[in-house]
Image (cartoon, rainbow, N blue to C red; front, side, top):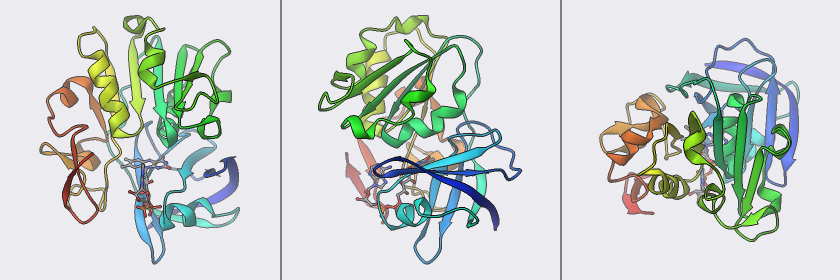
Length: 247
Ligand SMILES: Cc1cc2nc3c(=O)[nH]c(=O)nc-3n(C[C@H](O)[C@H](O)[C@H](O)COP(=O)(O)OP(=O)(O)OC[C@H]3O[C@@H](n4cnc5c(N)ncnc54)[C@H](O)[C@@H]3O)c2cc1C
């Protein structure tokens, strides 16, 4: 198993930490690792920076993410990967739409021509707002404590959506489904990174499958055309034990 050595643990919010490291790994934006939390689980995590210093950003949900988010300088994080296809890098005007920890995998795509649309439940859940050029960031929160009150589609109404050369989206599947529905009749290039329950990361266990695709090995990044063809997208998912449930 490979490892990197944590150089710094930065606290981003009350439940999100970024682990910074300098190890030499070749990664493209949107790829992920299966990170090992000993005696707990292996969990998928994307890179929030792919150039030196590299970084992963972890939101604490359960035991594995809590363990990994607590690693400190000098600790080793053991992993398999990097896995997955990554985002297509397209020159021109980009729009990044991220909700919750989903914004982490979009961070390596930022350049001077990027607009951000970040959403969270409340002000304290908004991540990486300082990374965007002034005037090119839109924030929405469920409770209105930061930015506009509403969902990402509320803020999309105020943007000239078809003016972007590429739109990249990552966050909870329900939010991404609302974006696919919003964009369905528009002339846009759009890519989405899916976060489904994942065990092996290499296409063996099928726990992340959706309409015959495996998110780990066929994705995690899919085009809007691919998602439109998946009737399970935003509707049903497999639990960790393999049971199919509705969102
Ligand atoms: C390709 C890919 C890339 C990912 N990249 C990142 C990343 O860069 N940063 C990051 O913080 N997370 C990322 N995730 C999500 C991360 O893998 C999960 O949060 C993690 O597996 C949780 O493990 P746990 O053992 O800590 O919690 P668990 O014990 O598995 O979960 C605890 C509780 O939280 C819920 N839960 C777990 N994960 C999520 C979630 N993502 N959204 C909402 N509720 C959840 C569970 O249903 C459960 O009720 C990614 C997932 C995928 C598939």
